[in-house]
Length: 478
Image (cartoon, rainbow, N blue to C red; front, side, top):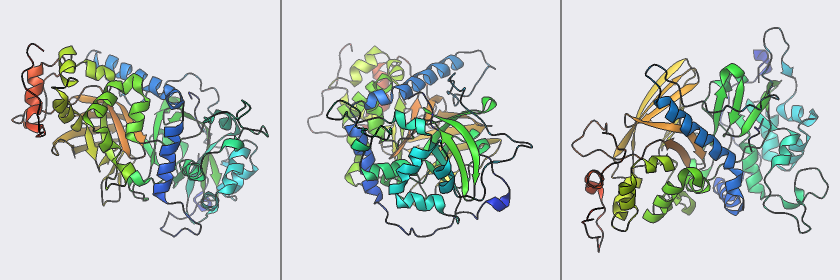
């Protein structure tokens, strides 16, 4: 899992005009069915937590790194955005520039390039059963960028189970697991997740935080206005790029008639929903997962499964360490029967529905999806309405030369940004978000570490739901 999955352009004549809206000429799988297949695959995977163990390791490293940065003396600030510090990049080959000729062949399509390459034979074989993908890779009216897994990447594909004789279900030993293939809807979603609309050179990717793909899950709206995105982490000085925490960009800027090709060393798996991601990362989110279950709010996160009108969302997920910082008394109260309704109000303040805020893109209902223009520096301020009576959280995003800083409510840092999900995004926060008292109009809070139970109740009481048989107040010496 720690290995990474796998451009620069030639002359302008080698490329085609910008993408335009055209109807597909091949049958298209319904986007809801595709998302259902992806979610079902994750739900059925017996070792899904093991699959994400490397991701959780990266998150833990990032949290510790940000914590150490915040404890440094003033003037030694650093961005928390670049957590990819692997030491196994000996196979990463950034493209040559200057007088070196471009790699690839500007007279051939992306499809032709991967069919002819000895390093991508298995991926070329895989797409033969998917006419929609073949059409996109041969389309000379629109540019695309393909992140193509090398043949070695196929050896890292997670298997759901072994064959009946104890082997991996690959009878012809070609490493494609053909005896136990997942549903075609899942494979189609997988293939689309490796294909990006437009041109994205290695240099462009180095400065990106997320990238749009051709996958359009129903949980994000099911349209090209709100595509599923890839998370990018980069170390520009080393030309190192990793997608979704684990997939390494190995070689790139292979020029084709209709776009660019980059080689990656592992598959990019379409992500599950927010609730599933929280559940599958217990080392980071077990307390938050318990809070979601005890309050019933996990059903709100999974509403998109049931065909609700929800379209995307932003989940501010506190780490286990963030919950511990509230102190033992506050935690004991919140997770007691008497504190359940307070816990529900608190968790609601971390959930935003229908508005999906990435570090460099913002999806809202009935809009075209905002993406930040590439530049040296950028700043964005957003107020996001939460499930807590639409009580907003304020978010400030600052980017500079590929580095990013996200601060919530003026002082809570996002310690791991842009955890992509098929129904939104997860922004991991280093502290539990507690709404200010109603007279605190500026939204800036006092120190919430080791908060008293009375202070916590005072902050949450105005938002409690009216319940029949409400719990008795008065917690004694708790």
